[in-house]
Each structure stands twice: as C-alpha cells, then as structure tokens.
Amino acid sequence: MRSLITYTLSALLLSLASTSLATPASNNPRFLAKSGVSEAVRRHVAPSPTVFERNEWTNAERLARGLPLKKPTPRRSGVSARQASPLPSTTYTGVIQVFDVASLDVPIGYVSEDSENRRILKHRPLLVDAVRVSFNLETGATAGTDIQITMLNSDFTQDFLLGLVQGVQAVDNVMGPASDSHDISYFYVAGVRAPGSLPGAVPAVIPNSYTTMTGIQRSAISDVWSISLDTGVLTPAWVNPDGTKPAVDFFSAGVTAELYGGDQATFLVQFPLEVPNFQVAFKFIPDVVAL
Image (cartoon, rainbow, N blue to C red; front, side):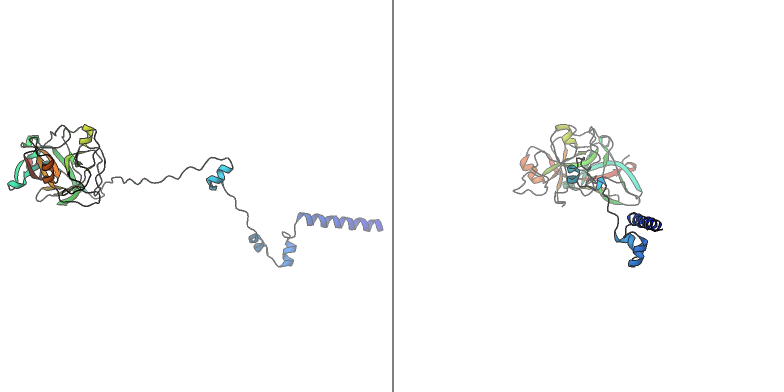
C-alpha cells in the first residue's frame, strides 16, 4: 500500500514539474488570473523587439558590418525646363523692318538673312534679302513680352533664335551708360541656339552665332522681345545680371550695316571708324502685308 501511495505522489509531482517548465508563470493563464492581469494586457506589456532592415542602417553601421554603402537619393535638377503654354497660341510669320530713328523713323531696309560672317546680323535695303521670322502669341492677344523669335532662313549654321550676344570687348554683362567699372558697353544682335534662354533670364554663356564662328565664349540671351501687333513695333531688351533692363541704344555700325546695342556714345569713342553709325528701331511686318 505504501508503495502505491509513493508511486502516485511521485507521478503527481512529475506532472506538476512538467507543467511548470512548459508554461512560465508570466505566460500561465492560471497565474495571470490570480494576479489580475488579463490576456489582452499581457500582449501589450512587452512588445516585440524592433527588427532593423539593412537598408535602414547608416553608412557607418554598414561599413562596420562590411556592407556596401547606401545608394545616394536622387535629387531633382535645379535647371528649369521650358514648358509649352497650356493656352492656345497663334503663330505669326513675317520680316523685320529697320528704321533710322533720327530721320523721322524712315525705313532703311530689313534685318537680312545674310549675316556678317555668320556672326552678327545686319540690315539690307531690299525685301528679297530679309530674314523671315516666326513667333507665337496667345490666341487673341495683340501684344506680348519676353517672346522667342525664330529665324526661318538665316545663313547661321545652327543658332536660329533671334537674340543678343555680349560684345567681344565688353568687359562684362552690365549694359547701360559707361562708367569707371565698364568703359565698353555693347552687344550684338545675333543668333542664339535653341532652346535659348528662359523668359526673364539673365545673360549666360550659352551657344550663340558669335561663339560658334570664333570660339570665343560670350554671354547671350534670346527671349527678350516685346511686340505690339497693332503698330508692329518690335523692341528687344537687354537684361543686366541683377535682373534690371537698362535703357540702351540700338544702332547700325559701319559700311557693313551690322546691328549693335548698348551705349552708342561709348561705342563710337572706342571704335571711331565704325561709321556710318546711327540709331535704329525695329518693326514686324507680317507676311500678308510684306508680300
């Protein structure tokens, strides 16, 4: 009888020990019930440890583990791309007439398709020699500013936007009346390569007809033209590096009738042989009128 009781007690003790080892007190429902902690609370007492993925490690941690560095995050370029206007536009084509300002705006010819050594635009007296141009305006508009004008039959090799290019002896891009800091202040009416400059941009070293033919780096700007369709008056504007638009002269220089802009008085002091020399103005003549 004592052996039977001893065997039964031993079996019971082994069973309790097995249950205790299999179910720790902190996870034992009976223990939790006694301590007043519910199963739901137990699940939130000790959250699972955070697992860090390899791509979350810093480069220092990756180096310590012998792993390659993280790839750099791509960044957007700061260069603004030209975007087409969402508004409907109308294309205008025609020629540009040149006037002598001092002679009561007497027409003296047209901006020519034949440039001076494919570097600088000039004017010629006959319509047949005129360069044909094209530009867009918002449909219904009768005027526009910061317009891009394309030359359709110029002899330039690849710089077909009508623009302004820093003179080869101009010391900087600051135009206007001469001062002690810049005694030579002039630019060419010439060609600029597409896509050109953005509206409102300041001159920058971009491809242009003068640089193409000489290899000399010069700043240029393209989208600087303002027009009134009612009068045809076409006005270019140089933009200084500070964004201002100084009052400048546009003039014809020399027997080759090249077109320049800047400070005419200073230009004549520096280049006294560039005569005749007189101020000019421009007028757009649409095809329906010019032909």
